[in-house]
Image (cartoon, rainbow, N blue to C red; front, side, top):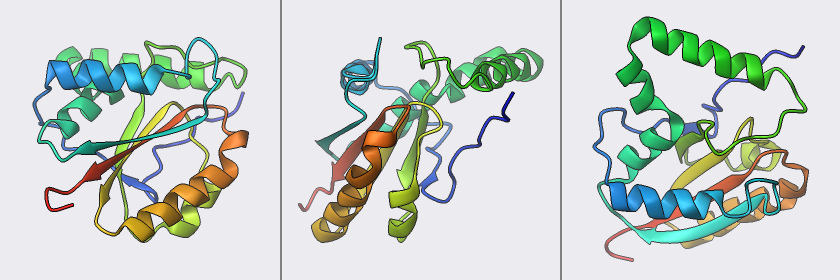
Length: 163
């Protein structure tokens, strides 16, 4: 049995855990994230763009299970996390819709790490687009290795208000 990998904090920073959830935005983003990911992984990498909105951190926390952990409390939350980690130790188990995603904001400056990145579970990577050429380089590095992904990667490019 292999040990579960941890959240990739070299590539990503976690979303704000106290952000509110916009249910409509969550529904739209969840549908996009899951398209080509379940029941079988047919699209390892997908990219879309959205305008900057305050609800993205809340959506990410809903997808990654942060809000569920808060609702469950300390001990039930710990039991839930241990169950997830035990299931992740079985390498042949495919991801399921109900499983939490890894969600986070791209840490600028991690372009070299992007090429070596392999999602440990379904992953939503949010990118604040400040420089389109850097974003294009990041996407090229992710695209170069996405065929070897065992789990889906969804890249959400968040366009600034002045784009």
